[in-house]
Length: 186
Image (tube, rainbow, N blue to C red; front, side):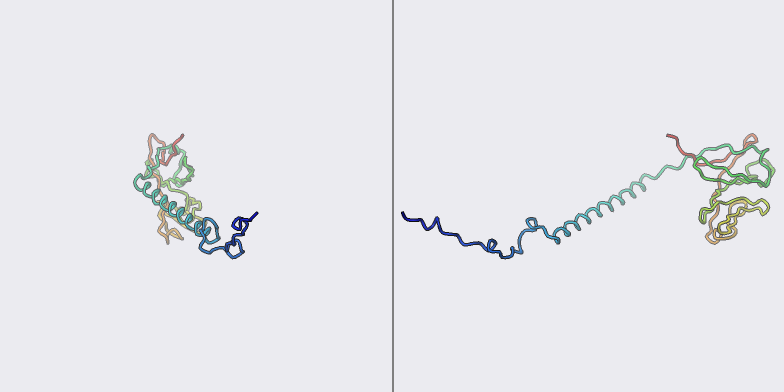
């Protein structure tokens, strides 16, 4: 019986089967390399950064087009005029938690007799108090001084041109009221 030489012959091995290195032009999806991974990771990072920056610009545009509503204010009772002597002061805490110093400068019984100023120093946020004997507001942190109207007269606040914020006052039927920001409930 004759053997078919074609069926028993061994085919020559390809270069891959002979142990030679793989072709360097192979597709990166078949053989992931560190360079390909880092390239894809960099592209994803740049895309994410671009999306975040467009989001930030969009948020600023929305805030510009639709500004925040002003904080609602209300007139709240402080004290009766009889119990508030000339040359004295008191600390009032607004519903928002802001401390306010109210000082009485006169005896006429009008709102002009009083001054209501934020008791937070605009320099570093220290607590300001009224010194009746010196007729000034004083910040002990850096010796900041303010006149009875809240204008800076010494220390770092004067150098920076920072004054104490004022709050409006009114007197009705012998009672003193202050207009302060209030938070909405609910």
